[in-house]
Length: 223
Image 1 (cartoon, rainbow, N blue to C red):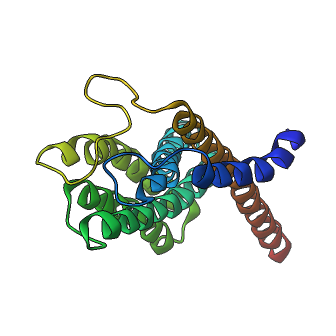
Image 2 (cartoon, helix red, strand yellow):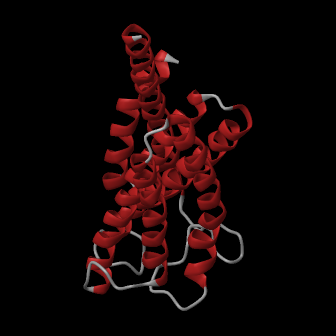
């Protein structure tokens, strides 16, 4: 495990360098704008993965009442919100190059913004409740509710009307139309961003656990 962590930094550095130097720019895109896909799509994937992880641990918390599960769910959503913001930022940069404006109210832009608001509300909800048990239960229920809406916002809503957004990675025929360099860098980005998420999640959840333990000790000492 330690070896994988040590390889993460040089691996991500190699992926970033390869994204700019190895694949040729895709046809039909202005300048080098197609290279944003190596960062934009992994960010969107990681955000979705984080929200699914949060849903899983939220369900576990409701079933078992283990505060560790609630802490991991909260950490996952915090990271999911971060990667969702990065998704919108990279998408806006692409929109500025291709369509002349950072924001165009495209269905895919708008639906992902709603997804960000949906999970941003989770963080405000947690901050508004002081009782840890009540906060955990309400937050877990909300995370499961949001997880039900997420597939609609990510996959269904963007396809209801015409979109400026380029064809997704997997085309309607179910094929991935990429040359070898593009494919290698793209999937390396997915793997690298996933590894970064899991590593930060473990650190954040561990820190939350230490904070909870310190508070419990302080509470016992004050009795």
